[in-house]
Length: 329
Image (cartoon, rainbow, N blue to C red; front, side, top):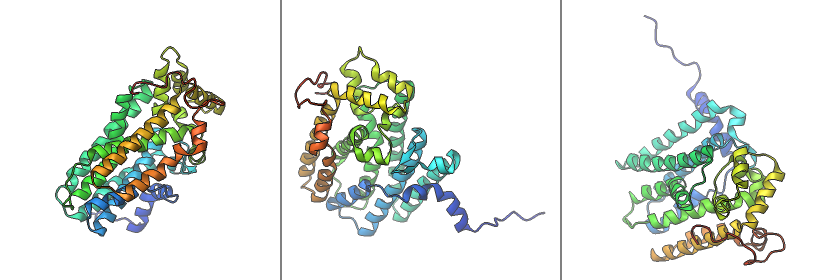
């Protein structure tokens, strides 16, 4: 009987092959918001530093892996200013690498030696995929969701990793308070801020591409508002259906959304979410780290330049904002 085959490739070399697409995207670090968030929550939870670091690292692994999959699902071209991983390594290898990292992350969590880790991990990753699935369905079927349905999707999708970090940390903390209302608000805040930035931020244009949400056919918060502000006009729906890469068409859509008051509405809702977050933070005794993080993130919609760019040219706040009340005024 012939002996079982053995690999001629050292384990380290095969690991390098498996992780190459993942490491490629990690070469340009993002803003590490999720890592900062878990560190900020430790102001309340006070778990040992080694456990907090391990959980923070795992959340970052999962976030980066999910971005790789997102880029494939969205047919993105750029991520953090460089070509997306699947354009370099191919779709098949890139999917395998991202999925491999999901399980590496779970394997890392096993070092925490807590029986509840696996169930918490599974529950939160299921929520993330439920949210992502609805986002993809609306996009591909060209169905504009209601604002409330969109918010529920965001809480599941964006809040999935937020909730995972805090729930894992609470396994090792005496603080068992219910942080879900705060996490839901933060999930909405982070995603809707990202929606706003995608269409207006110069930094976003450099790191991704101009108004990428329009090219992806994505129903983001300001796009949903603009569509529902004038249901007799199918301009945006038609553009989303086309998956346009024409910057002139996208600029026209941005101007249209400004006329509909969609950026003013989005900015107002971001300010409302920020205020809700501050109140909830204070209800837990305050948290200077979390408050500072929110203040830093708010600059994208509170700077004079961004405030001006949200309005039609030559128009002051409060003038001619047709449809700005939307579904949830």
